[in-house]
Image (cartoon, rainbow, N blue to C red; front, side, top):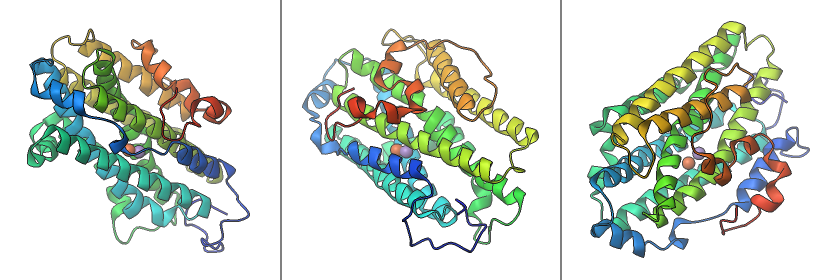
Length: 330
Ligand code: FE
Ligand code: MN
C-alpha cells in the first residue's frame, strides 16, 4: 500500500494489518506524552512579567517567540488537515496525522493560555508576524513550498507531483518544525535556565518533546516515500532540498540576530546562529544529505533536554525518557 494517493487499490478505512509499524509507534509515543498547558502554573511568570525581573531585551525575546510560534503552530495544523491528510492515505499514517493535529491544537492552546495569563493584547501577539519582517519571511518561506499541493486541482500522478508533495513535507517537518522551531526552543529554555519565565519555559519543553516526534515522523514519511518512488529523489532534487535548508538557516540567523541583538542570558546571537547550523546539519543527515556546516553544538544543555541524536532512534530510549504521561521527566 503506498503512503500517498497514487494507487486507488487500497482501502483507507482498514487500519489492520499495519503496513507501517513505525507510524503506529509514533502514535503511541505521542499518547505517552499527553499534557495540557493548564497543568503548568503561571503565577511566577505573571509576577516577573509585571515586575522588574526582565530586561527589555528579554521581554522582546519572549514576545517575539510567542508571536512566531502562535502563528507557526496554526500554519502547521492547517497544513496537516488541509493539505497533507488527503494524500497520505495509509490509515496508520492518517492516525498519526490526527494525533499530531490534536497536539498542534494543544500548542495553539498554550499560546491562548500564555496570552490570557500575561494579559497580552491578542492583536499585538497575533500580529507579530506582520510587524517583524524576519518572522514574516520565515512563514512565507514555508508557505511558498506548499503552494502547489494546496491547489484544489492538485493530484499525485507524476514524479513531479511526488516532488511537489515532498517539498511540502520538507517545508513543514524539516524546516518549520525541525529548524525554525529549535532556535526558539533554545531561547526560551535559556531563559528558563536563568529562572526567568519558568512556566512558559516548561510549556516550551513540552512542546519541544512533541515536536521532536513530529520531526521524526516527517523524516520517516519522507524517507518512506523516497524508497517507494525510486526515481523521484534525484541528485538534482537532493541539491534543491539542501539549498532550501541552507536558505532557511540564513532566515533563521537573521531572526536570531534581530530577536537577540545584545548578549542576553549569557547567550549571544552568534551562538544561536551556530545552534541553527548544528541543527540543520542533523536534519540534512536524517535525509541522507551531506552536512553543510560541521558546527559544534554551542548549547550542550539543549541536547540534555532532547538529545537530537535520540530523535532518530527514540523508540529504544522511550521507556525511560518518554513514558511519563503528563509529567516531564527527561
Ligand atoms: Fe506544534
Ligand atoms: Mn508540530
